[in-house]
Structures are given as structure tokens and as C-alpha cells.
Length: 360
Image (tube, rainbow, N blue to C red):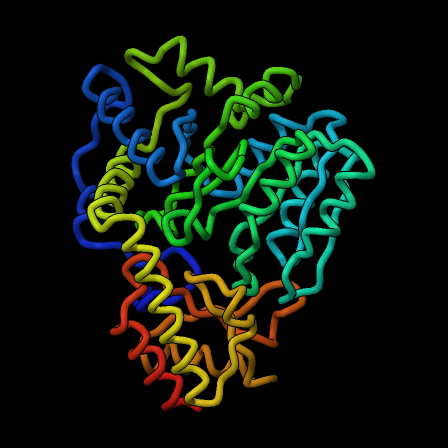
């Protein structure tokens, strides 16, 4: 396959030192040395999530984490409110409906901010077992007000689950302080490591709910992971053969992130996003989302209408750059530029803008 520069919303390009960990000889997924290494990696993840709570780390994807969360909290008749303003909000609904029929969706127009008053109106009209929302809606590049939704959930004593697959370690996120009870992410975006690991952080209220639910299945059953973490925690802290080299690569990615410092990292992503959006407008391309509600890891760009596929093909074949089209209702109307982790640099912005300018 042709080697391309990945400027997509994930997976991101990763550093050579992260990739090197994938090439080391395999080690056993159990024993004292592995268990110590694994638990230290979970501690680094806790810093990224802003939590002291338990972390479930398993071979899989972010979607596997969402599936595990819904099955473990909703089956068979839990009531969930889903905040939706894009394709991945629709994905939350799609997964939730496989476990319960009691799904209520509060929908907002694509590219528009959620209205907290409407969410509160739903919460005021009836009790929900769970509220779920996407932090960064990757299909449009909008950043949703997770902190404020969390405050509403606290007020109405409702469990709050967040999809942070495209926001963790890119956007400020403080799980414990913001009242997030369950937070789902994955390895291949802000955490600067290869695809292959799903991550679910679970707070005390989340576990209370999970213990009450007769959840189906085994592999994606959070109760099973908690049970084995307690029962075998001193030598085999997970119920399956783990993806050991993926965990090693994740560990290096986390160490790089924390060495930079989370606040410095958030500032870097903001600054790069501001420059990218300014440069796009300079070449007469308009970002799809207004600046004040835009995410800082992915930018959706309008047009050129009817020729986006051709543009992306030329960028790939002539410039070695892989940008992304869009999903759902925005498909064919916008294209997306990922600028996460190592891709959040002035040099990366210059490369993308130069190629776009040449093609346009």
C-alpha cells in the first residue's frame, strides 16, 4: 500500500518511538512484571481522563467500548437519553437500541450547538437511567458542552456517559470534576498510538448501575472485566489474552503526552486549529463549524461542492496527503482535516494548505 501522510480524524500518525514498541518480541500477558507494567499504564490513563476511578482497557475499538457500556448499563429495559447532532450521535442511538427499546433522542441540526434548555426539558419530564453524548462530533468537527451537560445530570441525579474517542488528550476533559460517570475512548487518536485498544473509565455511580444490570455476553461485559481485575489482579489483571505490544505502544504515547503536559498540549491544539482555520479562509475555503464551537482535533471544510471526491483523490495521488470525506448527511458537502497529536503542528498546516491551494 502507498505510504501517505495521514491528516484524517484517526488513526493518526505516531512517533517512531511508539511504533518501535510494536516490533519488540512478545511477552506474556500475565505474571508480576507484566501486571506492574499494566497497572502503571492504567495510572497514566487516569491522568489523561482526569479521574481516580477504574479503567477497563481491552483489545478492541472505541465502538467496542460504547457497546460494552450500553450493554452493561441498559440491558434489557434501561431508559437512555441520547444527545445527537451528528453521525456519531446517531451511532450512539444505533448501538443503544440493540440493548433496549427505551431510547429517547434529543436531536439538534447538523453543525449547530446543542441547547442545554432542551436537554433539561427532557430530564425534567421523566427519569432516565443514562444520558449519553459525544464530546467531539467527528463528522462535523463540533465540540459539545460536556461539562455543562454533566452539571445537568448531577442536578437530576442521572448517570452520564461520554464518547471521548476523538477528544481525549486533545480537549480539556476532567471526568471526576465534570460529573462524568463513564467515559469511553480509544488508542488511535489523541493518545498517539496504533489502533487496537478500547478504553472505558468507570466511576463509582457507574459501577453501582452496572452491578444492578443483568448484562448479556462476556467479552464486552464490564462486570466480567471488573471481576477478573479483582480475582486475578496480582498476576493476570484482565480476563483475556491482552494485545501486549499495543499496550506497550500506548504506554509510550501516554508518556509523551504527559511529558508535554496536558495544558500545553491543549494550547498547542487550539493554536494549530486557529491557524488552520485562518489559512483556509485565506484560500477561500470556509470551515463548516463556527470558531467558537469548533473542536481542536478535526476541522470540517465546506466544498468545493460536487468535486470533493476529485479533490481528495488529487491530494492523495499528487501530494501524498490523505484527508477524509465526511459521513451521513454531510457526505459530499464537506471534507475533513485531522490535526491530532503529531499532526497538530504549524508544518502540517503549511503542508495541507499548500496542497489545497495548488489543487484549487
